[in-house]
Length: 219
Image (cartoon, rainbow, N blue to C red):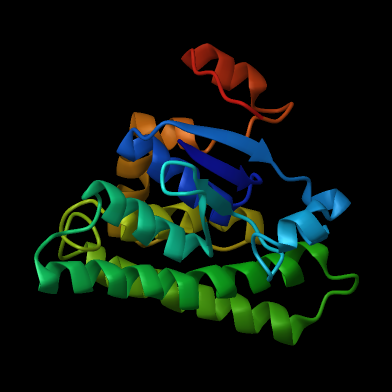
């Protein structure tokens, strides 16, 4: 059984969507970021960096994995799914996973900070991260104009990028004029596992939706 420690953020949802896609049994412990639960000693013993998500694989001697990209690779390798077996195709999937980890995630995160949370509006910072996010979206657009999914077949690379890109409006970002990107966003949003995964962990806002799916989570 996999135990997932997470919060309703793009990085957290990457893992819950993957777990749903893989059909692995798992339990969930919701981490309250507002109360800095992720900085408590017991959590830091699992992830010294004090960030969600974290998984504990109770079927593998309680093996702990932190960093969302590393978790996605661990789960894909554990199941033999969502990561191509062919070495070259596998490398392509990992390249696009790293694209999210090193580009999409950090840049969208900064856009969110300066567009929504900064105590004062700093035009230079807003413009810098807005433009960089748009550039990265255009990189995805070019790739998705050539292939259905980032690695050709649906993989953890799509899950990782989708969980971030789908939140573009939250950071006041724009994807107009990017039809291939929109097609890809819609295709993944239509997947039942993705629909279930983005409702994890159960919060007051999602409880009704999760109950409607008939799923039972330990929170």
